[in-house]
Structure formats: structure tokens, C-alpha cells
Image 1: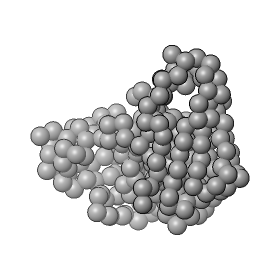
Image 2: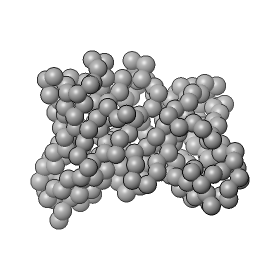
Image 3: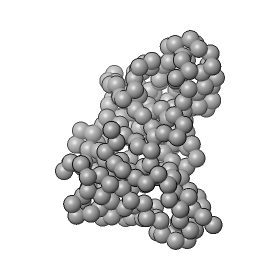
Image 4: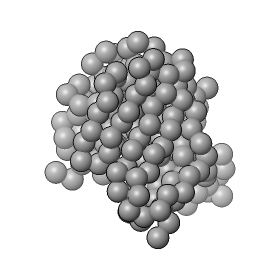
Length: 112
Length: 114
């Protein structure tokens, strides 16, 4: 099992550009999450999903959109990139059988 | 607001036990205590969790006080690879409806000294 994979690893965007951060898990987990982490801070929840077709906002959803059409994939969309979205983005997954959330390696995004 | 309070940083000598404290005085009866760690910008890694009883696994031990208002994570024989930020998190377990993500504070930066 690859676990949780994220692409790309790094990206530089210009203000106003858009992009999609990809997240895939191969553990058949129902729950998936997107977090962002600013320098020196803990992770903050952006969006989460409890199953295909179901998503909900976390603590910091503004400027982002998500969709969950399959169990495996949970992409995060930035429509109009802003410097405040410069951060490291982590995707995670879990299910009812375990208390543990499995995290991906992260995507480092810089908006200039 | 974070539900937990942890020291900002701690040092520990290699080979010694590292004891990381966490205060969670407002914990509810159905909330678990979770510990994760993050090694140098990698994704966080689950360590252990508990509800009321002390717990032990291959990575660490978790000691929860009887009133559940505080806990201690113990790494029995710390190595240099244990240098990381350790996060103490309280939340309802997934099976109890707690599917809405983890709330991370700033954690404790544990530095293992050679």
C-alpha cells in the first residue's frame, strides 16, 4: 500500500492563478481531510469528507473548494491564489476501524 | 482555542526517557487523548491514544491522570530520530461521531541531545 499520496510536492503560483492539489489514498478509508500548516504553527483543518459525495468545511475554508467523487480521491482547488495561501498542505485519511489519521507527505505552495 | 496546553520546547539526553506533559483540564467524558508527532516538515505521525486507562505500544506509553485533566507521553529510550514536534490533541473518537478532523496546537518541540 502506498498510503496517502499527494501531488505536486512543490508549486509556485502567481497571484490570481488557480490550481488543484491532488490527494489519493489506497486504504479504502471513508474519511479524508485537508489541512494547511503555516510556518511555526500547528495544522489547521480546511475541509473534510466522510464519504464520496459528502464534504464539509473545517476551520479555514475560505479561498478553497473540494470535491469527493470517489472513495480514493479528495482534490483541493484554489481558484484565485493569494499570498496568504502560501503554506504547506497536508492530506489525511482515516476510517471507523481506527483512531489513527494517516497523513501524506505534503505539498509546499508559494504564491508570489 | 486549543483544548490542550503543552510546553513550547524540551530537551532530553539520548538513551534517557523523554516525558512530555499535556494539560487538558476541560476534557469531556467522551473525548480521547491523542498524540501525534511531526518530524521536520513531514506529515504528522500517529503515536498513541487513550481514554481513561494508561496505554502502551511499540512507540510510547501514555499515562492519563485519574481525573483525566492531564497526561504524559513517555518515550522510554529516546534516540536522535525522536527529535520532532509532539502534539497532544483531545477529541471525540471517530466511532463516537468525531470525524471532523484534528485540532493542532503548537505542540512541544522535543530535542534529543547526543
